[in-house]
Amino acid sequence: MNFESDHLVLQYLGEVGDAAQRRLRPADRARLVERLRSQINSERERLNAHTRGSVQVILDRLGTPDAVVGQELYRLGDLRNTGADDGVGAMSMRGSRHATVARQMGFRADSTPIPAVADPSRPQPAPPAPRVSP
Figure 1 (cartoon, rainbow, N blue to C red):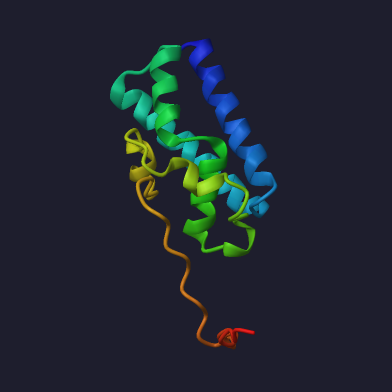
Figure 2 (cartoon, helix red, strand yellow; figure 1 turned 90 degrees about the vertical axis):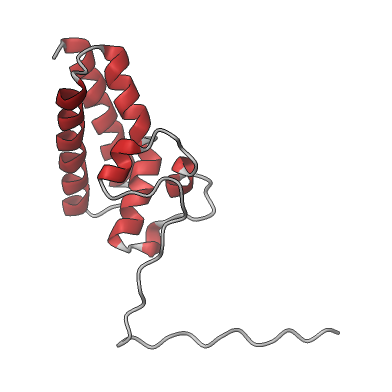
């Protein structure tokens, strides 16, 4: 592995860590970055990817750092931090034809993530009242 491609991976992991810092707990962030590092290294070895360009292909398959963090939030079932209206996160990867690595990590880049199941021991909010036309 060469310096340029190693630097590219470290830069990407740093960007993921920065994005995760605002949205994940420290332990979850550390596990995500370590899992990504391991997956990237495995893909680099499997594909004999030692050039900057070949490593960039692997990183592109993972998606943007915000997309990776968004998928991790759904994976963890932590819906309170999804920022659903901010236009980034999990939806950034939707439809990607290059999501092989993300799929291997358990991400579904071609579909909307399924929210976590509600805890049955917690009271559920009442359904909204029907609208009455004036």
